[in-house]
Image 1 (cartoon, rainbow, N blue to C red):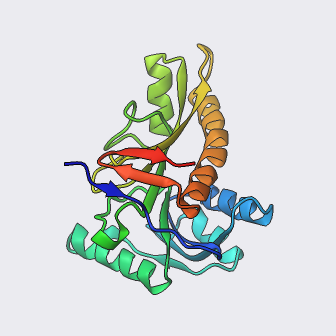
Image 2: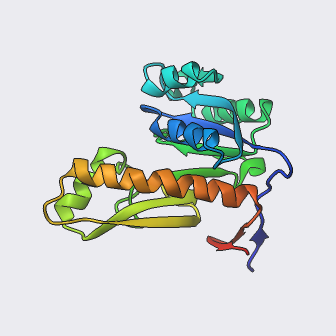
Amino acid sequence: MNVDHTPRSPSNRPLKLAVLISGGGTTLTNFLEKRAAGELDIEVPLVIASRPDCGGVAKAKAAGLRCEVVRRRDFNDISEFSTTIFGLCREVGADLVTLAGYLSLIHIPEDYQHRVMNIHPALIPAFCGHGFYGHKVHEAVVARGVKISGCTVHFADNEYDHGPIIGQKTVPVSGTDTPDQVAANVFQAECELYPEMIRLFAAGKIKVVERRTIIQD
């Protein structure tokens, strides 16, 4: 039986984002730039970093954002780790949790089902899953010789790069492109696609039926 899920979203106020990072914080910076330009109506009450030496930690603090470091190795199991992360998200009243280059697997509790978004730097189901992250994705794209790559925004579930796909954006790949060139082109696509999908969520326009999403007018 198909079960319909409409992700909850706020009305008449900025969307509260929790942003989870593992690297340089470029996606976080993009969100903040879109907000400053009036293109993304958000608040960021919480940033969670997977390690203290993430470049994104300094960026979050420079922006005056609360930033907590939650390391997987400090917990006995993934359940305890995930409970801590979502406890922080509930504490700040996060409407949506965004994975922004976040590399640790988390288990999503019932109250955050279809309220956790991830962006992957390839066109899922290609070049995705455990071990496909960051520059490794673009190296694999170039090695395989594909002519189109891109990025995918999806709702996260308890597996890597597995939940319902919300949106995808393509970029061409030429036979002379290096992984660095592909990465730069894909990141430009990410900078447009991720905010666009967040806006759809905030407007209540994303409906999930089983593992498919429907974008409502």
